[in-house]
Image (cartoon, rainbow, N blue to C red; front, side, top):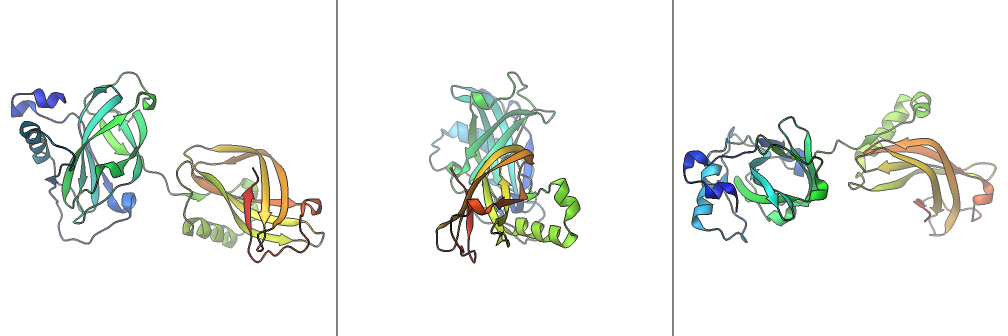
Length: 295
């Protein structure tokens, strides 16, 4: 039982965490036009929550104390943090200022101390909250497992629950490419990155850009190496296979890379040349092709 449920007087019932608001456009790609400047959020319990009347009263009291939201916001309003059998239990309101109901998906949440230092970081399946009605505030308990904790001790006051916002997936150019490419060529690569769906969080993959046979029979392929993780990665060996339009293997070979780094959440272009000996098919049809890591 949360300690706030054991408090006897209204003046003893108060939130211990802070409020953090986020743009709905940034989080769920939703934006509404409205003339309202302040939006109150009504309390909404998950259908599976069958709470005694006194516990409903506490949540209702806390919700009534919340500041209004601005249009097009999703807010995390911290109520209480405590230790549970599964880890650190964080109780908070998830608030929706849109007029329409929302359904959240998987997201990484951060538990921050009063200095905005990370106490814990964990990925949650937020679809478990169910459909959150428009202009509503839904209480929920988020359990950060012990292995997600970054510190062993922290204050139970003035903490913040926040979404970890990923920076926009961007282009990463090696210095030699930065110097050698024209501004138009750089812009073209940026446009491809911006118009292509980024890799999923934590995913690393490759995407073909250009393939061409030279006069000596070697195959020149330019690809994007796409890093969807939140860390810079080093690549030393990369075995690749090219499949032509007929679905047959056109080329195959392994490549050694020296001091090759792809920055976090970026796509880096690179050219790999398959020598004639690594070409597996005469006159491959490169009108349509894919390149993949040969595992």
